[in-house]
Length: 392
Ligand code: NDP
Image (cartoon, rainbow, N blue to C red; front, side, top):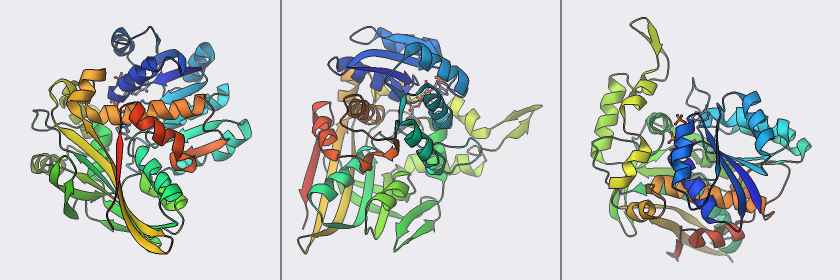
């Protein structure tokens, strides 16, 4: 029975709290802490059993450590923002507690999407005998585990991976982001990047696109982007020749994004305005709908999966594995939209893997470095069924 401290009371934090509270046989004690205590209290009031709440500024490692000393959890689940990853990892090292998150550390002044800062903690976690689990949401997270599952059960060698993320949901706003707007807009406005024949290749932002017929959704235009799981999968899938990441966007979303970028509203460097320094993207975030607030009116489905090609027993094989999640079902179950749901459920399962001792090890790990079987078995049980098909 595990005791967990969840940090971050946003869309994803709310789902993690719900799913941990539902799993009474796994999590005996839950504390939800965030910058705004009222958000934690509001989430706690909607849960099926009592949890503790606390206020914490996780940018402050010493205060976070003080909270961890008070709560004495077996594991800290970081679902605040990527900016807090290192200060929370420092606090975990100081207090001797395991760590996990769903997104790589981001320096506030640079959109980098790299694991290098967190991988640099490997030796410290190893020496402390502690596990740090990185990127345990859906993508990164389940998509990495899909690759590990394919490699373990269906391929001798994998040559190519295409991760395809489609959100065909409609929320009624002309422009909104499905998770934290600042992180989301940084991600989609960055240059595209993919791995091929031993090197990284770059493309202009959202300039490469293809139509794909997503099961249970239909044809959608998907755009090549860089995404952090490419960096870890290139290291952990031996012999990989090419890996790309694709995400679907509507024309309306792309038009808004283009205009916002052209007028400077997506800039992440401070600009002077009426005697104050403001970061345009942070100001834009204040104007956009809170992603969690989209949930009540969201209709439609997401489909996220991996198309994988390689060889098994000397024969070439093409394999597709995916999950479909319905926005309305997610809302009925935990009051969240499918993007928060598909991130929060794997975070809870990752926490379960650690607190029950199914995944152990001292150091900093990406999810594909562990045995995918218990995680894959839990996905449908906790609300994320998956389908696999052999295409040839
Ligand atoms: P939200 O913006 O909805 O929530 C973030 C929460 O973190 C807010 O409650 C915020 O508090 C809190 N927070 C921010 N700064 C601090 C701080 N210094 N100290 C304590 N709490 C803080 O984001 P989401 O819930 O949508 O996303 C959460 C994380 O999940 C992000 O890192 C995101 O990148 C990641 N993610 C991962 C995905 C995956 O598949 N791997 C997919 C989607 C998201 P306040 O409300 O007071 O500002």
